[in-house]
Image (cartoon, rainbow, N blue to C red; front, side, top):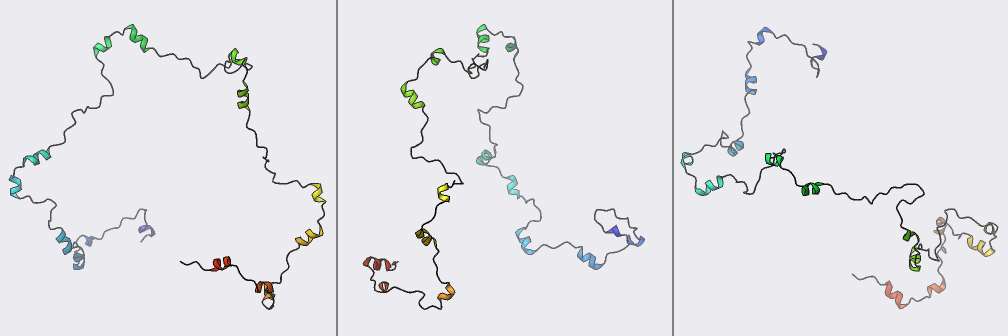
Length: 227
């Protein structure tokens, strides 16, 4: 057979059916496998009816509905104040088209003209943006106004932030440390931990520390917390 016979998405060649295929009979095994699957007993117990349409008894067909059932069967009525949506295009009556508006209505229909005070004509660059009256230009500020117009001062103890790189003075560069400072700058020399375990006198306790007596306050603090 050709290679693309079992490929997916490609055209498969048409097989030629043998003449005896139309007269062949299925075997008993094929007939058994072709039978539908039987329902389980649990499934049949839960669904005793074979049809989804329920059988209606004769008494139910001939019974008359009570007044309460008829009342509940009525559809919900629309609210008495409900109004349908108006059409998009409003129908104007002929009388409204032929009416003449009085002068008072025409005067009220005119748009209200307001003076725009948000924007001013700049005019020449030398002039002020907003017009300043002569009285405002010749006004003299009071002592209180001058005091309030002053900017907030910085406290006397205020120091500005230092620079990241501090300049070193020449005196500090040429300074010579004293013998005491050189003595204090020397690191503390201690034996290593490997040698301390072989030295019996590594952790020497003073005689005064052995004879010391703790105070009552230390004894009180040394007691464990009772919980």
